[in-house]
Image (cartoon, rainbow, N blue to C red; front, side, top):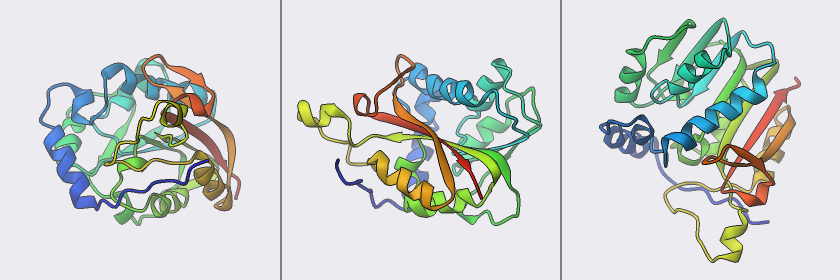
Length: 225
């Protein structure tokens, strides 16, 4: 198993990247995903795994264009209260202009700088850890504090142990962090998160696979203390 590769990129650099991408017309390009399908399939995966849970308050970190909330409305994933935190002002403004079925609030701020006492039944991070402008473990620790006891965390990120890196002499993109999934698992467990499910995920097809069979992984966990 390879050791996690962390990219040293500050929050200003990340914001500049999304400032540039936010000018594209397609939403998946605004948030730098490879395709619309691969973006939406990540959202659908989260909702499929969480839909039967009792969720009143939901925090989505790196909420981008607000499309995750739109998809959740279409799939009848109902919560009483939900909040999207988005660093980039253009993406924040874009998401605020949309109409949602459920009460939805957006905050234009670096999540690290939000120090209120709000706690949530669910926190989601779709593709955030690999390009967050902070030490990902520092970010996770901050986020875990915002989860209620028995609340859930769902995240997706870049899988360093994808077999193609070994068998086909491909190399991880240098501008993102790539994770050994076990490093994330160990950290979550040390911070009172019980792992409910972890697998590989193929975003283009929406298939759940063995961890080593995709460049993307997901983790669903529950806070036990």
